[in-house]
Each structure stands twice: as structure tokens, then as C-alpha cells.
Amino acid sequence: MRVTVLFIAMSLDGFIADRNGGVGWLHGQGSDSENVDVYSEFVKEIDTVLMGWNTYYQVTTELSPTEWIYSDFTTYVFTHREMDSTEQIHFVNENPASLLERLKSKDGKNIWICGGANLVRQLMRDDLIDQYYVSVIPTILGSGIRLFDNTEKEIKLKLLKTQTYNGITDLIYIRR
Image (cartoon, rainbow, N blue to C red; front, side, top):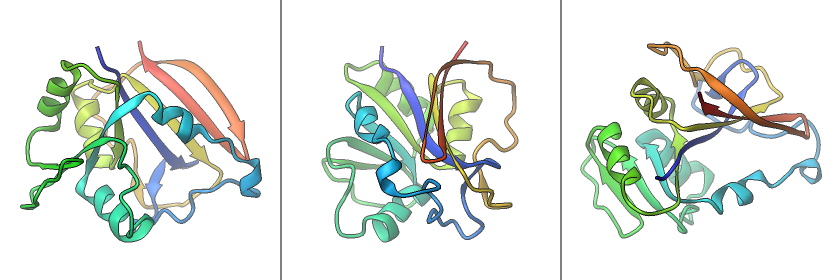
């Protein structure tokens, strides 16, 4: 069965975006030459991306407005907006848990939960995230969009791996 992976970065104080929704702080403490390319290794194991509307909008208007950066994957964007889907990007207005369970029952590689916080919380509520890959960025934002805010229940995890580079700490957990 396919594995559902939350692969996301957050500030040391637990935010995935600043108070204005920005992510310009997503970098280490030094130069880019000190970074490890964890993304390229991660995406070798996935073929499907799930994201909320705000994440999609940020990618297409701020982070990569001229090119769809997830073109190697099938992407599902959860939204109440009426949007025309393409072969690569499916705009869906359905329960994320229902879609995820359907996708997990099909053949394929792992499924990446890309963001945002609301989608993550919904999937956590139904205990549908198998692996948590969280990169902790060396900055304290003080406010913004919190990743794990008001979870309804405790979720016990087992630490699989840690790694550090350029002040960033990657924490990789699975459910136990």
C-alpha cells in the first residue's frame, strides 16, 4: 500500500508561513552551498501531491508563476472554487480523507501532503498521515500559520532519522 508523507518546513516555533502568509524565511543560516538536496531524494519516491488552495495559489503566483514546478506528479488541489482541471492538476471539492483513502488503494508511489495547515489537520484528525518529514528552519517567526494547531487527539510517533545541514534540522517520524 502507498505511504502518505507530510513533507514540509516550519520555523523553530512551529509556523509554516509568516503572519502575511509568506515563506521568504525558508532558508538556512548560511550559504546555499551548505544545503543538502533532500527534496530531490524525497520526490524519487512519490508520484502524487495533495495540497490546499492557498498552497496552490502561493506556488502559482509567488514561488513559480511561470512554470508548474510539480509537473512530474499528479496533483490534487482541494478547493471550493470552480476550476478546470488538467491532466496534471485536479481541482477537487471533496473530503480529503475520502480521496486519500481511494488513492492509497491504487497502485503507485508515495503520496505527498504538501500543505497547507488546514489540509494537514484534516488528515491528522483521521490519522491518515503515515510519515512526518518536517524540516525545522533556524528562525523564530513569533506568529503566522501554525502547522500543528489545536489537534484533536494525541498522535504517537517513532523517530526514524534526523539530519542537520546549514542550521536546518530534518525530523523524520512514522506513526507508532
